[in-house]
Image (cartoon, rainbow, N blue to C red; front, side, top):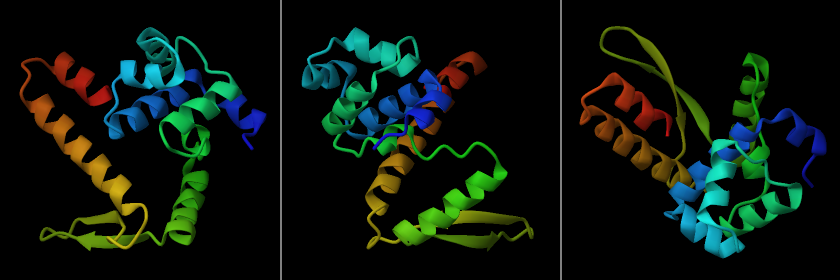
Length: 154
């Protein structure tokens, strides 16, 4: 069950961003999601940009329409270094994902989250990666820094 406390501490913008990101990963337009819910594209846009906050019952309906658990729209919310670290521990425990240390040719150390193809998160990460590469490529094709930032934020 969704914790009301959790919803109170999350901003409308955070929930809206998650709705937008999951909608896009599912290949739905705002109009298409709106049709599934009996809402207008304008209402979906307002949820996504934080102008309106969906009620708890609507969060469940949106999650159902996006074929995700309602928790995907509000949880987890790592808000500091320690909670982010526990988030990584949970990813390892729940999804078998691991952290891999990578040292490049110049000796720079980086860390990567690793999920193999047998992992149930693999498909989601694959979709996220494809969307990420698309945004990066699109941002390189525009003329101004303002346009680049708009693309990368959206």
